[in-house]
Image (cartoon, rainbow, N blue to C red):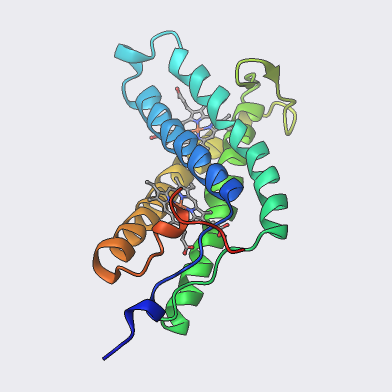
Length: 190
Ligand code: HEM
Ligand code: HEM
């Protein structure tokens, strides 16, 4: 017989880390859906670029929130994963989280910023501040920049779907406390 009490993750993320995770998850998912609707329902719902403007205003906050989050994460490590996970699975979970930081939270918004820069289009952070272009306007790179952002948004969308599916599996199948470690109910380690 195994000892259920020893198999579950007993510590949670720091409350600030949880707040950062859920705020950014909300912004990220909303930005993805708005970007998708802006492109694929252009004539009906985005005739005057209103959704494109909202997409850029919201999604551009991700770069700066990520900087804050990485600084915070440096000093506040994640709680240990449950001992029921094999070393290989723990390594995979760790690698997946690094990939989320690198691709979903850094590379994807930077690729959007790059696209708007080469297209010579403004990005208004939260509709308030104009971000400086990353590079000078370059119409010859428009197609490439567009392809990179669109391709990244779809592949990283799949990564995020995998991340959410893993969290649900931990909760429903493994029942190992990993989802609770990110929920407001589980306290951080003393
Ligand atoms: C500085 C940040 C960003 C900028 C400037 C930006 C810019 C853009 C622009 C201009 C479009 C095309 C909209 C249109 O043609 O009407 C677009 C599409 C899109 N963006 Fe972003 N974006 C940024 C960040 C993000 C982030 C963080 C995500 C993911 C959450 C994302 C996901 C998407 C998606 C899914 C599409 C539609 C792609 C397609 O299906 O063709 N973008 N983005
Ligand atoms: C409903 C949606 C989501 C659920 C249920 C969820 C759940 C979780 C859980 C349970 C953890 C802790 C995993 C562990 O310690 O092994 C976690 C961590 C993480 N999640 Fe999510 N998540 C969601 C959406 C997102 C989104 C949209 C992003 C970013 C695009 C994201 C990025 C991350 C990152 C980077 C970590 C690692 C945190 C760290 O260790 O610093 N999550 N998530």
